[in-house]
Image 1 (cartoon, rainbow, N blue to C red):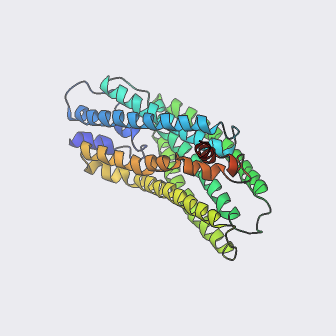
Image 2 (tube, rainbow, N blue to C red):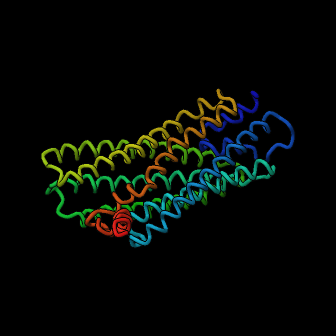
Length: 324
């Protein structure tokens, strides 16, 4: 047990879960404690793969239905596309981890690292996109004159979002290529350290930015009343969704920082339970609440967006029911 725990705690800069599962270059073939630990993680990997796949099916179905009401590559559609892509990669990563463990297969460390870290950055991109939509709803639910029109404001932040993410993902792609080269020689720790640090910083930077922006506009909009009671309720619900995602990101950043301090203190079963609980709080709960038609209507049902409120999915369903 001591040897196994020390292996899980070495390379303190390791990415949170996948490399903790698959630090050995080949799965052990005996009944050692290390193999028993990996069996625990294999079961958890299977459960998580099934859970992510179920959520993926639901999200993909919603994305197809959303495509009937909004033009593709609009930011609202991209938001839910990000959710689907994230769930897809998560399903593949946990499914592959289960397969590698129980079939005692060798694995490619570079591929495992990409499958575990890429969803993190996709999640952060989706979170940032959600925050931009939250800010737009918050500002234009007031009778204000700080910004001229919602459409011009939307196009401005849309250009900023797209440009920064093109640069970011091109840089990330180059970084992954360098990681693959280093992984073939077993000298990838420096790159893993950079990835883990970038994840931790982003998981704190975006929530802190959310709080600061919220505080700033709460002060700027203090003298402006809401345009209607409906707009006030919409802002309240958007606040709730944004707070849920923000809380999850803060929890995720905290886990990235303290994981290496606590992993050597936990048994495999306890670590597995912590893993499932962490993913439930940081990913599943935000997704479950966002993959709801009432939230989708909040994002699509604004006057400047590609859908008008009278043509939202919820209102179409209500109209059909009322006409029966």
